[in-house]
Amino acid sequence: MTEIDVDEYADVWVFVEEHDGEVAPVSWELLGEARRLADESGEDLVALVIGEDVDDAAEEAVARGADRVLVADDPVFEPYRADPYGAQFRHLVEERQPSIVLIGGTTTGRDFAGRVAVPAHAGLTADCTELDVGEDGLLEARRPAFGGNVLATILCEDHRPQMATIRPGVFEAADRDPDRDGEIESVEVVVTEDETISEVLEREVGDTVDITDADRIVAVGGGCDGDLEPVLELAEALDAELAASREAVDEGWVENSRQVGQTGKTVRPDLYVAVGISGAIQHIEGMQKSGTVVAINNDPNAPIFEHADYGVVGDLFEVCPELADLAREADDPKEVIQ
Amino acid sequence: MTEHWTVAVGVKQVPDDDEVRIDPDTGRLDRASAPAVMNGPDRNALEAALRLRDEVGGRVVAMTMGPPTATDVLEESVAMGCDDALLVSDKAFAGSDTWPTSLTLAKAAEYLDADVVVCGEETTDSSTGQVPPGIAAHNGWAQLTYVEELEPRPEEGRLVARRDVEGGHEVVAADLPAVAAIAYGENEPRPAGLHRKIYAENEFEPEMATAEDLGLDPDEVGIDASPTQVGGMETVAPADRDGEIVDDAAALLDAMRSEEVVP
Image (cartoon, rainbow over all chains, first blue to last red; front, side, top):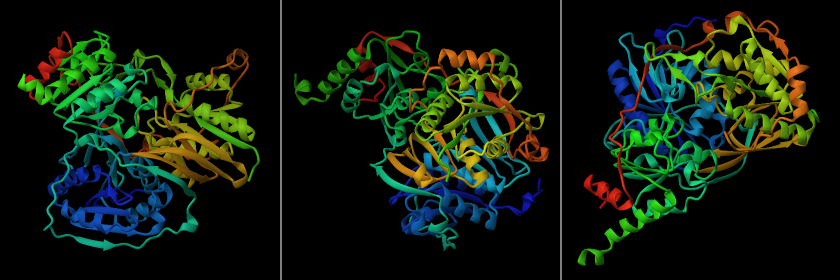
């Protein structure tokens, strides 16, 4: 094994994930947290943007706290593929030697992070929920383990960079300051289309929802048995965003971008209504920072009731429509006049 | 390009996560408390691999890195329909994080002369999802993750996947050899046939390979080659809430109003 001099590595890097002109919100969450880490260690915060026509994302990265932005702009990067992204990112990491590299724990981030970490022989910690720099200057990357029962601290002493993917929604997005100064550098693109080993044949992507921003959430679990109607009705009546447990996503009832929990997103709405969700620890992980938690479940022993402020033991197919009706009536001005 | 494919499937024996207990004194996993089972997503990987073989022709080989007791998950794989199995076992692998684990499995895939490696999207014990992309990265192969469905195109020497991405889906073609990670629950794994089961349990013996057999130096694997270490663990119990049970929807709405979270 080749020994490396860890002191030759410096700066905190954040990957700014951009698809079709939209930046994944987790990128700004990472910039906020990375700014704190960089300030503590007295290092620069560097954003890395890969894609095609990504000038706006690069400028936004400066406004959100980056000291420098590295931009790899080329048609080979649109749409995203693991091999060209990984090769470009790896080249920059080896050339510039960052100490810390943070990547959003999205399907994209989880897809290509290994294509950087493996050739660089870097430590890569998955789905972190807390980050710190210890007194010895090492990144302390904390992640839930064993189904969320344990928070493990992962260290990387002898290898660089110290890489981590971070679960979306865990950190607050960095505030933007349009007057901030930062240096934007266009880097050499080292990937050509001829070298790629994959091809995107079709792509159907709608507007991505961001449940991490919602003030109210109605979340559905296995108890709905695939019939989302009463839950959607309740979400509409409460003006809430739909979310789901892993089970509902794995069953294909709800898209994965709405998944709350250890392998999904972390949410912190004012109101979280859990419908037909048993309350596995992996799910609780992602919603415990919610304001008021309400549970509707026909099993009085469901663990979700221990993590709820209020609960109704009852059939969701009856309780949801009734609650939706009552909530709508309250909004109806005629009711107030009566 | 070969007309028949060798499909290697990565499977793993994990503690049954419904039964896992944490030692309250040490905060560590009490492995003895939980029975060892096959990682759930691996059944979807096995099904996807068997379908590839059924369409293209060739063979499916289950592979695992683990102690000799991990033979159990290989027997299960053979009972489900795998043609053969490889147990990669060596003391040198002890303490491996995802980097040497994916290196070892990458070498095992080469050892088997695999055209395709199929894995589950992640394991229930560590949930990193890093091993399938790691295998691809070590070998410089193409990768397909969060796969819903695979379509073999042997005439093109490619494997095509419909995969899940944030907010939608895409269809991606990967040049062979390639690694595919199947999204959990995306197919209905076939049950083991009775005859296969009897064969797997009584007659079948997996092939064994050590680090040396795979051409690995002991320094390249195990704890010494693992960039990450566990610095500490603490048990975290989410704060319990009051859990006040109310009678019906009307009472629930009143409660939500009292908290001023609905109008």
